[in-house]
Length: 416
Image (cartoon, rainbow, N blue to C red; front, top):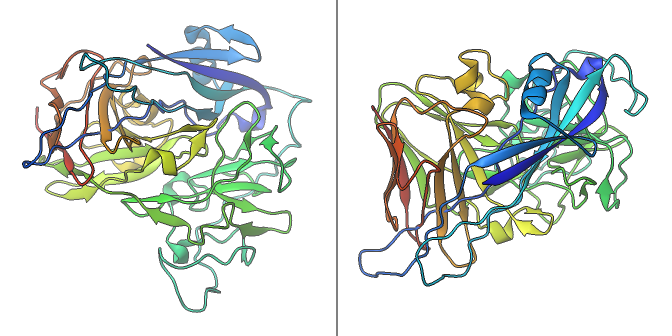
């Protein structure tokens, strides 16, 4: 079993609606075999995640934490999850390995002396492309002019995709860090921005086009291992690159994975905003009859959590749930089967062994829902991995398969 440690912190009552989520960041990968070459490939099956809730240094029971979240007494303000790293090939073809997740929640009280000054409430500005200062070059390949665009201007002209339904001015997540200075090694105070809060100094995260991932996050991360991501909104109110060696906001993934919908209803597939607030808000709207690219990364070359490589996590909602309803932390419609409570999770990432690992597993213990459809990973895969007629391949904990470098896998949705 993988354990998710959820830290609770004190916050003022105005943040009771903070939008963030505990999410699994176990990273999974897929493997493909070319017809001309057979390979011996280890397959690792990942166990379900157990969530541990912490208030300071004290553990809080799952029932108490859930009741506090439901009543607005607690809010999630961030979460991190270390990577799953495949072990060296053993004599036997299977093994298990897991590490702890870390999720951060605020406890809401009527007043508090341990938080930053109360944020000023004001309507979140609508996303805006602003003035182009890149010499005419726009789009995902345009270099972002660091320090030249104001924080209230969403950088759509530079490839970022606005998520207006979140009410954050197009941003996928906001992490306000009033005590942070460029050059700091860690960030001791992080306040998750919510709809209606005034914009402040901190980190503004964003979505990228399908098949792309964001390129910006600071070297400094949370002092208690929260992940932090996005552009920096500086004290002068301008957006700065946080990885200035990467001049664009988005970078293409390494490919090799796509999703295909064979049903008459859409499927909202929602990637966690990682590094960042880690809510499942980055959408891929799998419409009927379409095949869409799914972002995949070379884990060792992307964001490192506590010095460890990471992978991408996708929450798969029930058929017919829109991205506006499902690609959020706390969904309103059919609450127990969408958003953070979506029935199943897909993990994707390429390991240093050259194989891309893909895992499909239930969203336990957060959700007991099961997909009302069949999900099958096809293509150049090492072993079958699927959810079919209420059952996962291999066992109740889900399955993992791999594809080799240059291979391709398709995650297919079909009627149960």
